[in-house]
Image (tube, rainbow, N blue to C red; front, side, top):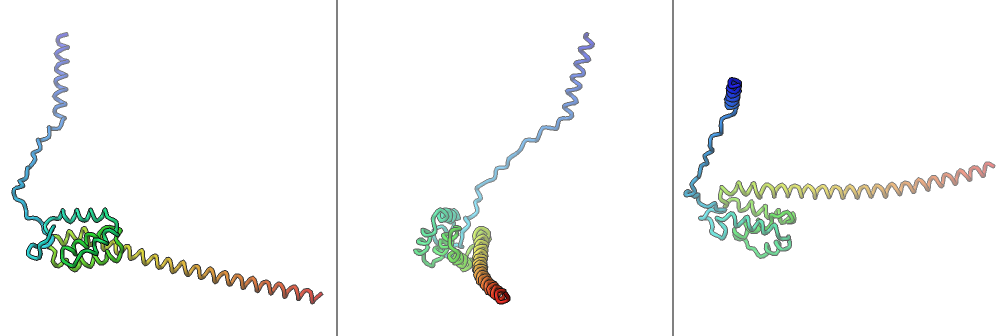
Length: 196
């Protein structure tokens, strides 16, 4: 019985050893790098400081908040705000931001796109690509879509008018054919009555 117990214990220990060899090694502890925030880069200014100085010049968050607030407003409210703005660089930037929401009419969005093109030469080069990605390209695409929709609407209206004209013409021709058939039937009746 003792030998049986010893053999059984050896078998169990062999099994434990075999499973330990098949198990993958424990993963190495992950060392997280802590980056120093002591070296802050200077704030990204929309316009270089030597060009002009205004509120929000180096605060991208200021312009993002304005964009979010503009998006929450209806077009008539934004239009009233646009009417109050002048032609200075900060006012032009505000005009662009107030014209970004999607409910802005085509002509006003196109005007904002032109403003953006006009001021692009004074924008900070680092900001230009972001402005192109976030504002200019989507706005241009939206303008193209609206232009295409307008064109398709005109074509559809012209085709609908053409179809209506063709229906009227077809109805007039159908009436003429009926009149001609009526005349022919009358002549046939007269011809039969004269033959009898």
